[in-house]
Length: 133
Image 1: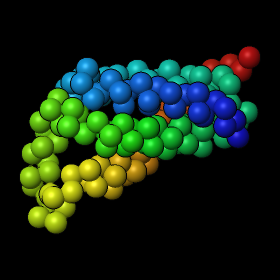
Image 2 (image 1 turned 90 degrees about the vertical axis):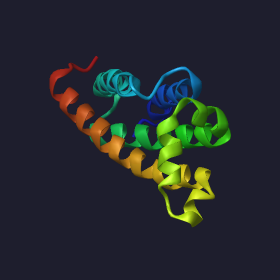
Image 3 (image 1 turned 30 degrees about the vertical axis):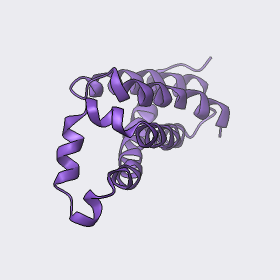
Image 4 (image 1 turned 90 degrees about the horizontal axis):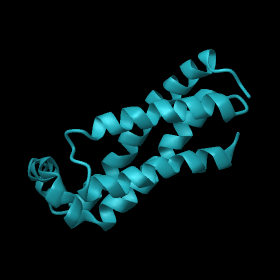
């Protein structure tokens, strides 16, 4: 397991976490993630010592930590640029609606695991096509 590689690739998640707070609108955010996943999968396929799926999965789990931390810390700014989040908060049960940051903390790992499965699959597939250096 190449933990240095996992941490280095997770910096993409940190950049996206900070970028989505106020710069990247939620309408084009998936395109950024797709590009990041393709780049990460290629790098994992070239540099990982094996376990390509696991490397991709772990990158997204570390990304999840960056994203949750940034969105919780900069919640007001994030909410100002993501009105859909406000609508989601108002549709929650009363005990959850009063704690919107908690919603991020609970839902973040779910998205982290889901995206980890996607990046893991991308990495595994890329390992079949990319030559190791």
